[in-house]
Length: 408
Image (cartoon, rainbow, N blue to C red; front, side, top):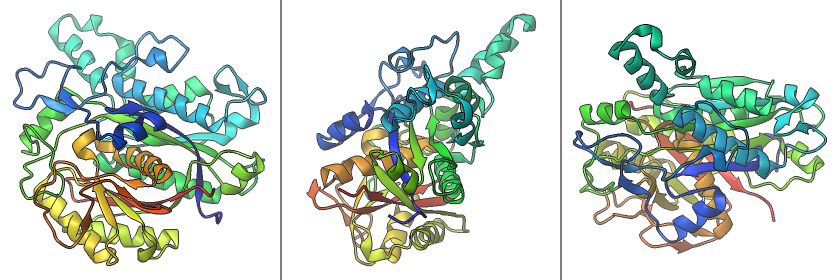
């Protein structure tokens, strides 16, 4: 593997259909759905009451240290990061104290996180306390948890990360932006394990009343089913979760004999006046950045969320950019749309599927929106070496990443 790639040596995942790569793989294989009635806040007064919600989440199952208060989005990020660190075996007796990096290792360990909505639980709690009674009783601790970069701060403190630290808040492609930036940093960090950066990179978003109301006001939501790439689609279902990837150079991974889950080969993002052009540009640029030919893509993990015009634009862009018609799947019918967390969650799913050698079907699909792409209608048992992951945003912005299976 060339050193333009980033080796993925650890994956942490919190999703509506499981925590961790093994649970995700098993859930995808049996077509488990994470769509359920919203329980994390009172949605009874709202028109939409279904979403891809993470059930029975408890941070204490993932993190040994006790917390006085943690926002749901931050808790997802902390849990996913802890899983990624353990999976990557970065916290060893030689470089850790408890669950912390120390010394030079801490200076080389950094963080790139993205979120569309940030910490809405904290914002709502603080403003409610501020406006419903005596302002002096508004909790100052909660105020500090309302910033968009609060999860970054919490992770840096929890794990002793003193290296590069960046927060990306660019809407529904925020997680993609975090990963694209991390890939660039890994490429520029140097090749040996002595001086390279280790980066935790990914995204998180939590369901909130604010996000649900905003999606309702924009007429984006379906009331029952998410139907990606289907002519009967009438909107998306929101989701939530987090995925964090532990990234390092391939050379550094080899030098420490690390298990490699997969590789990020290339990434790109684009904005254009029309969504099809933006998506096509992002795909083409990502392939160029990865030095991968279109016909080398074995499967596409599409962003399709059930928004009719956006799905049609994505189908047209895939057909234009990948004339070899690789199989295309769409997982948001099972997960909901995790907003800014989609790209890292989808990359985790792609790696799980590459390990299993299967392209999962796009469920709830009856009448495809386009005959020009090869939509997976049933599980396809095929060798998967290189996959494309697409991330679209209702704003028209788009991102794409190329991910490869680990050798052996």
